[in-house]
Image (tube, rainbow, N blue to C red; front, side):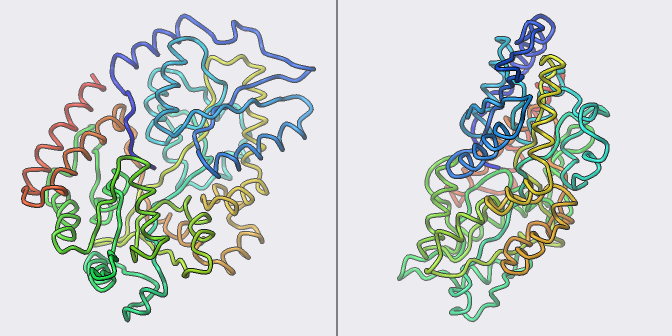
Length: 430
């Protein structure tokens, strides 16, 4: 889950709602080619993971006698969400798309998403891990199912920890995190203890790690209190102590900068997604051993889930929905879920995949992969309120000011930031 700007306004949602009442991308006719129903699937992954998704699409097209999937890559999650808004308003949306989990409510609220629960089998629906289905429901309907799902992890340089006299299994709480970061920092060698891209996902983990919540049931900001202040204060204190680094750049650039520091032995630890695991292990092979651990909590463990679900668009024809269901069933087949998890580092999304012999063997040989699955029991649902993505971006922008100017008061920053955040949420939920 990487924070980047996305348009999420009442006006945009109004345009979507209007377009849904007056247009259909297919004009009531399914697209066919050589007796196959053609459907369009928007991918929102980049780099190697995009190539892996394409390989599954190609595999599906080779084996399906009735459906042909055209994959169109739309950039990252946020670019994909913005383009989807525009496509719906213009009447040329895809049949299927990945949708970052906090965006599901945004599109479901205006009726853009089909009820997948009516399309897939009951057996299939019950196979998805319950901890990953919380962001798939809206107004009593199953409007999405998990596809590429993740949790944040703490990545640790095993040998660097051992050299500093630290347990390489990693810190369990905030005090231990600060101790690890202090002992791993070596200013003379340009090594920082912890490199963290400042992102709403990681801030959510700090709130959940205190037993708090981001947004309450009444759509009110719920961390304008000691929990919110302590979370931001942890980062600011570590910055003041010179044991944590704010990677340069915005959005993906900051995430990549943190990865680079870790890969090149310039950071002893970093917060990243489990989706980065396979790549980081490959890039550090022969350099050092990558260990993974739960995100440390203050009073308890707690993390958000992340990644994207797959959704079906309501305005597709029944034939296209049937074809889309065939592709969803394929992508979430046990063996394909296992393959996808092993190739990317994303979590197995079904019970059958998690209980498979191949995953058991992977976890035995590479226990780094098991950590995300184990951490899932401590996960909380991310806010599904409409406008949350836009609101959380403004929140992070305010918080970064207190991390760039370490003299700024944390309490005042949280008070101001949450007020701005609440204004955005209220605007989108009138």
